[in-house]
Length: 125
Image 1 (spheres, helix red, strand yellow):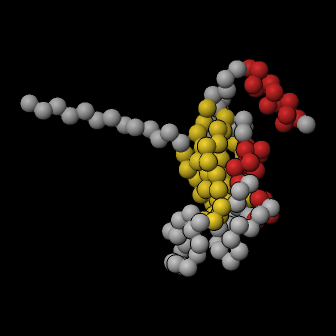
Image 2 (image 1 turned 90 degrees about the vertical axis):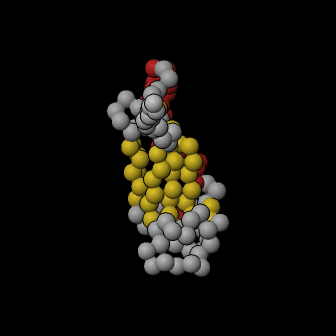
Image 3 (image 1 turned 180 degrees about the vertical axis):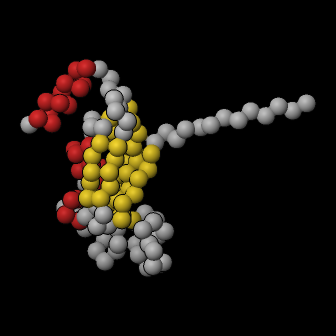
């Protein structure tokens, strides 16, 4: 006889995209906070945010400050909004290429009340 077992594997992280000129909202459930894994404002895929089907865009386009900018704005918070614009990241890694913001994150529970206190103090300044 054969037995079949079904296992649901939850993704280790969430991925969100925002086309250039739009905003991206990262949101975690109450009691958890954003843990940023990877981020890029640029273009690594020809298919994302490409409704016209352009094929001549660079797909090796990365704003080097992407992770740092989003980390500064979102780390330790349960939600944040980022504009997918050149001015947000203060860098145009590939002029004349329509870019998008790609964010990989998961939601984690704070490790201790000490962490919560320091985050709250930072946000008040």
